[in-house]
Image 1 (cartoon, one colour):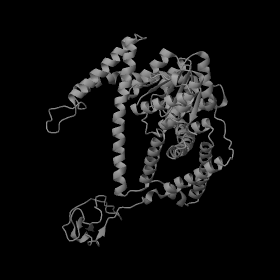
Image 2 (cartoon, one colour):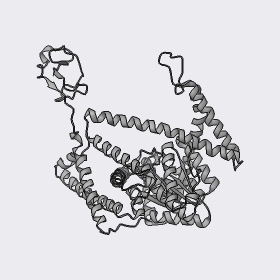
Image 3 (tube, chains in turn brown, orange):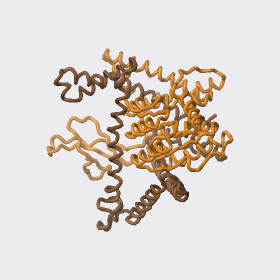
Image 4 (cartoon, chains in turn purple, red):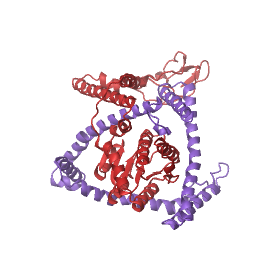
Amino acid sequence: MKRTVPFLITMAAGLFMLVAFFVPHPSVRVLYTEMQTWAIVVVGFTYVLGVANLLRINTRHVARRERDWPFKIVLIAGLLATMAIGFSEGISDIMDPSVLGYSETGSRFQWVYITFYSPMSATMFALLAFFIASAAFRAFRIRSFEAMLLAIAAFILMLGRVPLGNAIHPVIPGAADWLMEIPQNAAKRGILIGAALGVIATGMRVILGMEKTYGGGEGS
Amino acid sequence: MRREEGGTFAPVDTIEGGATSYIDEGAEGDVAYEYRLVAQPPEPGLDSEISAPVRARANWFDRTKFNVLVVVGFFCLLLFIYIRRSEGGVQWTFRSIPGLAAIEEAIGRATEMGKSVLYVPGVQEIDDIQTIASMILLGRVARMTAKYETDLMVPTNSPGVYTVAEEVVKSGYSDVGRSDMYRSDQVRYITSEQFAYVAAVNGLMLRTKPAANLLLGAFFAESLLLAETGHSVGAIQIAGTANVHQMPFFVVACDYTLIGEEYFAASALLSNDPRLLGSLKASDIIKIFLIVVIVLGCVLATSGQTWLGDFFATQ
């Protein structure tokens, strides 16, 4: 029962969504939109579970003085402080423009976001440049025929994308464009077609209840 | 201009002079409307006659999606045929996917080394099909780690994924009779912010040094950040995604990569369930069909016939 009911709901919702894709009739569209609203409500409830899990794991870390426990205090304090500021500001008041909601520019919540989160997030993203360099170094070591092809293609492409390429020979930017538009596009579209069929097959397996592992049960 | 039958005309839209048709998106159902074209700037001699009254009726089928229905319908038909044949005992052969065999090998390696397995289910919500496929694979991985008594860590970046992943892992342990081994901190919600999640997972990798990293799901800019950190801690890495732009990063930084369709086929191949294998065979057949259609479409287009391409064009 615990597993059958969720699968019946999955099947009904999945089949309805499939039908709704082809049916523009208002009676179907209304329910279609309504079901998407239900999904948002369900996701809202999962946030409560997610935050509870986060607090439980990290407070336990602190209580047991496990490795790096002071960092967990920073995490918990940051989470609670941000939540408190966000809830205290709430949403903006349409009747009173002087009341700033948490998402409005100039609010305390936005200040926290811009001052703390944005620089840290940008720092993480900036690390990508160094990771690309180390990954490229390994990728371009010519250890096989395929690796050689990859290295030659990458060399032409990089040269073709900078003014130096055109200065060396005007054919190089054209060769770079050709690599991107013909072989690269062909391979990419092949992968996309395969993936799209995989998506449909996986979707059908889930909707028809053949694949049950995601719901916490054996698939066969 | 538009008016309800017998009413007063009011402007509804401005269209180019060369337009030969117009769809009124704002028309209410079952109301009789009359239309007339009025020139801008005003020039009464160019205004059209008042049209005959017309009524909008809601359609039960979107005809612009007929081609999608044909292909999906054909695919579903093949699915049912091949699933039936599989259930009837027909055996299918598939090419081996090294990345799949490597999953069990990686978990075995982690067991031998006494280290953990890190499973990252991507950064999309639970309604994303790649995340759903990842949850299916997670179930199989959880059964293997439970069987081998290896620690499994699943950090998630969405509370929706966290709730499903927790249930999947718990059931995986229970399915092999090792419910006692499941710990509530194995599956954890980190944050929904992309780079904060990456920082947390990278920190987890650097602190715990897992022997195997399984990066299976939808990934974006964080793919290389995760894979390179995993490489630096010496973990065997198996990645799988359908995000074409991230595949090169995984190919470079990981030991094995499940590309596109291989990722979606993985759970069926791991399960060895005849019905799931039948559905894979149906995918292969429709792939052959699509290759034939693409080649035929190219030949026809080259000879000036575009009807096949036009039929498959989506709106």
